[in-house]
Amino acid sequence: MPRVLSGIQPSGDLHLGNYLGAIRSWVANQDTDDCFYAIVDLHALTLDIEPGDLRSRTAATAVSLLAAGLDPERCTLFVQSQVHEHTEMAWLLECTATMGELGRMTQFKDKSERRASVRVGLFTYPVLQAADILLYDSELVPVGDDQRQHLELARQLAVRFNNRFGPVLVVPEATFPVVGARVMDLQHPGQKMSKSVHSPLGTISILDPPQDIERKVRRAVTDNDGEVRYDPRGKPGVSNLLELLAVSTGQAPDVVADLYEGYGPLKADTAEAVIELLRPLQRRHASLSADPGLVAGVLAGGAAKARQVAGETYRRAASAVGLLEPG
Ligand code: TYM
Image 1 (tube, rainbow, N blue to C red):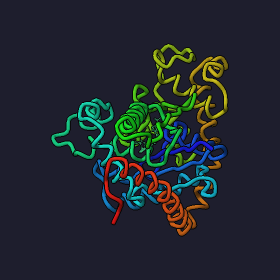
Image 2 (image 1 turned 90 degrees about the vertical axis):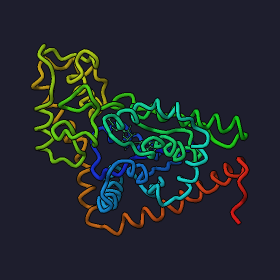
Image 3 (image 1 turned 90 degrees about the horizontal axis):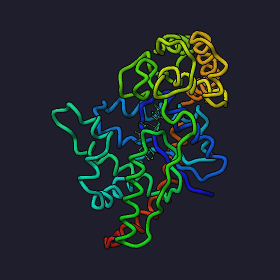
């Protein structure tokens, strides 16, 4: 069984981009692979977040992931900070990475732009992400398109580490969904849907009630030429709607485009398809929320399983670089 690892920041409220770009693949992978999924709370510390919010969002993210279809019987769902090897492994990898390669990370450049002071954690963030991946000997890492560069770095660090210290780390491969790898903001179709950008009308939460989804899709920014055509560069707003409709109904966006003459019917059907896509998830969310003890149990079990695998890989890596066995 191929080993899979992926991670998500604890925003609490997942959006449609997270769901279509990553979580749907996570759910599907459970059938065929040995899956580890991390709620990466340490990564969330790189930006300002209130301690109480971090705690509650970590739990809320776990509930959303279970509602989306993660099954603790078939995957290991855990919280990053409960497995201390993540930070230890990150140090070994920080001593492998260079300032130059981290400085080239576009997410770092975007997030540090126009800030008077930039935290070191924001700079080394991708190294912690590489540690997340490499600790689990993961072969496959299902992610959205925005993680491409971070995944390439994780591969490079693994190769460099192995060249220096011997064949210790598995070199992972990123996987992306064919459609939905980059869901765009409905109001600003030139930028990806994101929880860190304040765009309430442009972002669909997986927990949005049907009337909100309908309103957001109806008001989605398109263009003036009125032609329904799949052309992500030339017509990003219309193409984003086509992708949402296509992925929600299991078709190809260019095939879906041929079925429509105007934006009105396209928007109406897209809203309907997204509402139907999310309906079962929202129903499960309502029943899971009624049982707060369940999530704590799932996360405790997940951390115990994750520690076993991560502990073994870390000891292998630590020994390879010449650190002594724990006394
Ligand atoms: P995060 O928390 O921003 O997003 C979680 C997953 O959702 C995908 N995603 C999208 N996919 C399509 N369209 C969008 N608009 C969109 N927005 C987000 C992301 O690509 C991601 O797969 N650095 C990572 C978290 C992380 C991680 C890891 C991922 C930490 N360690 C190890 C994989 C492996 C992040 O911030 O994702």
